[in-house]
Length: 103
Image (spheres, one colour):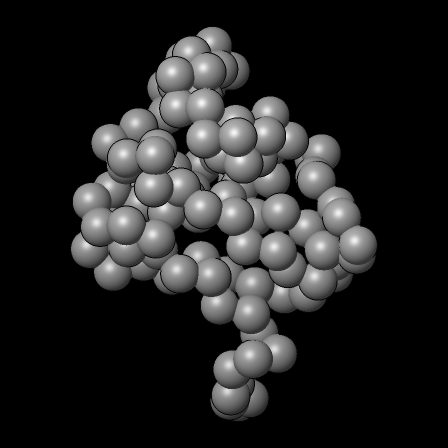
């Protein structure tokens, strides 16, 4: 899976706005959080190009989320993280930033 890496951090695309979750509603396509073309279009705020690309590359994906609200989190390369969602509002949770219990 290709990723955008800058200064040791990986670009992770997520949807912080309410509505449909970008990744959480499309978890069968984990590559959408790393896809370099998606990262580029989000950074440049080129929503029309992003939608056209998604229609070609991921024709079966649910695009109910507002692509204009997509954001990029920069995560240390190799760090464990997850994307949580509440009512479509996604947040990136980094394992080292949370108190985890071990059974």
